[in-house]
Image (cartoon, rainbow, N blue to C red; front, side, top):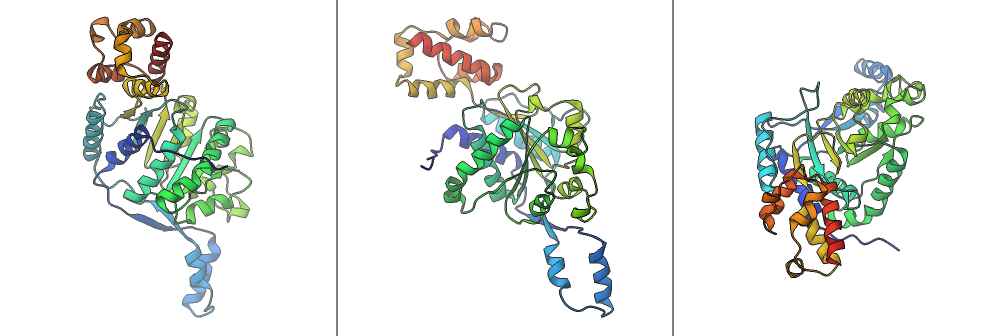
Length: 354
């Protein structure tokens, strides 16, 4: 039995939050030459003096790779876009492009979504939309563990037919395996959306096998896999970034040469240009719908925000700020709470209603 997926507005809103951060970026895909080996250069020289006359054109064509075009709009333009998105989503505005320590280029965007709300679906759809609007097609999904890696891969498989219907083509991701460098060559040379899923241990461990990504490999034309990946200017998507933010891991991720990074979690250690949060008010509506309740039920049962929220996170919000039940208050809650605290609030609400 095939799974049926229904579009959820909050997921589409999260997708659009990312797309709108790059308004003004031209739609473009760049090509580059995959340096297979010195043999190709030798054949080119032979062809130029007539020593060989056939086969070179096809071989050169097969050596063409595709990479993401660099962000063409300025930092100020990107910042303005981010601020527009933040205002639209009732979030605090970034005063500058916020980057992790030690980084002076690239962009990091934070999306707050709890596990179980369609987080993986949301960033897969974001890939399709980034490709549609800007031509970006190279993505690396970084996860903190093998278990999450397998779960993400399964989500790609389960949503293939759904996205085929929406966008006319499927994404066929691969899990990075140090013993299969050809997968990286295919990743670079494919003109379609290409996705590599990798857990941090695969590029951050000390073992010889795990470090093969940094080694020149004979079966890879004496090239380093990391160099081919870096040439594609990938977009990095980090699933649960709070679990992969060690100093060594962050340094290793720089080797991927990404044009920007999308960070999906509900428990971020640090927010960088937060552009979307699945807020308490929206979660309230979702849960009320699930239990076939309405906002009037909340009034009739004499429930107030202060009863529920203050005990959960009294240091974050005062009773004076929880004066009425409405979207204005929800906007303040959204700015003050993490998604996890919002879930605690909603579960408390449902328990009290019942």
